Amino acid sequence: MVYFRPGDAGKPQEWAMIELQGTLETRHPVPFSGRFIGDLHFTHKDVPVLIIGHHILYGKLVSLEKPYGILVKDRQADTAHASYTITAIIRKKLLFKNRPKPIIANVPKKL
Image (tube, rainbow, N blue to C red; front, side, top):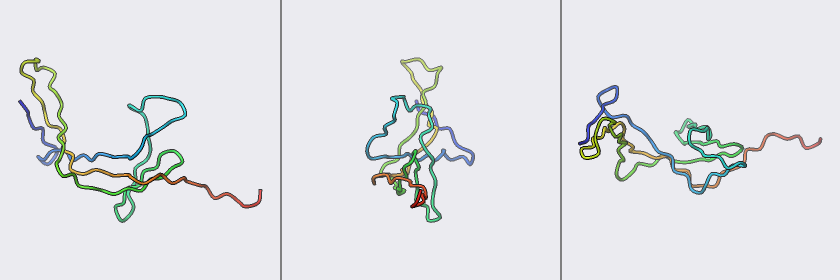
């Protein structure tokens, strides 16, 4: 059984997902779960900008062909009659497919 949990205005919450081309690597192998990855900003023309460490990525907002539903399994449900609640719907994604550009500080020519 699937239930629907409406948001503030009676509609489901709208989420977006982020798609990166490639892999994220760190100096020390640590899991990314629950960790700060970077800053997400939008320009005045609604272009998404992702800053990760000393790199900047420019992306675009893309509508998905088919939306995704975010389901949460209810804890009280037994395994034979599991029930789920729809908490949000994803209709758009932020696509970052270009190589990251390094952020270079203004360095004087003479030291």
